[in-house]
Amino acid sequence: MNAPVRVLLIGSAGRMGQAITEVAKRDPNIDIVAQCDRDDSIETGMAACQVAIDFSMPDAIDEICRLALQHGRPLVIGTTGHSPVQKQSIEVAAKSVPIVFASNFSIGVNALFWLTRKTAEMLGDEFDLKIVETHHRMKKDAPSGTAKTLAEILGKSRNIDAEIPIESIREGEVVGEHSVIFSGPGEQLDLVHHARSRETFATGALSAARWVVGRKPGLYNMEDVLGL
Image (cartoon, rainbow, N blue to C red; front, side, top):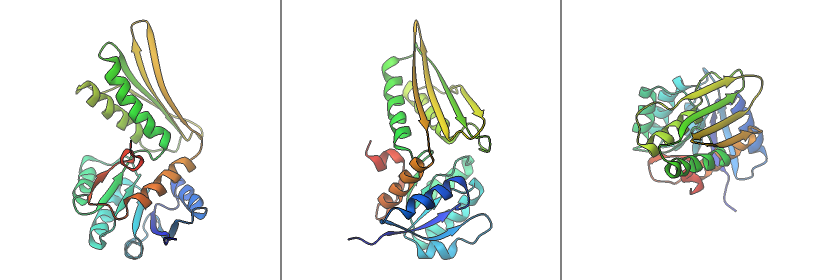
């Protein structure tokens, strides 16, 4: 039996950090050897782990990338809301270490990404596009990272530069809901995903952590992990 993968969890006190901690307790292939949150030093944990999972804040990414490069550790990044400069830090780090950078780690959402791409290609320009996303009222970034990814997929599939309309709703304790709406002449097609529990994201993030260990340097996404 292989030894468990040693994980550093960054952002352990957050909603996703807590979900990952709970799921990891039931996974014999994962050992969370270190946890840290805002203002905690991550260097000791980075040295002790085989892979770091980041669900913290965007402004932590420069330090995370610096230490990942220093120790040669792969990263799984689930934090959203990075600025273009922060995203560039991730891209530069991925030239030297493998990084899974995903806006959503749910298997269902990544199937939604794939279906959105294929549907946009199939329906063509006669169908208008819109994205609607709903999350809990404490979520800080809007639109969500998942909605931005969907918009990027639609833009590339249609080869258009115009922004895809996104409606963002923040209410209650909604884990996450995303709809991609194709409105055409005489008909409408909706692709919808409802997240019922954060455990689905936590399970996906841990799968990505196991997958990325030993990979070649590069910037990967969850579709790579799932083989979609």
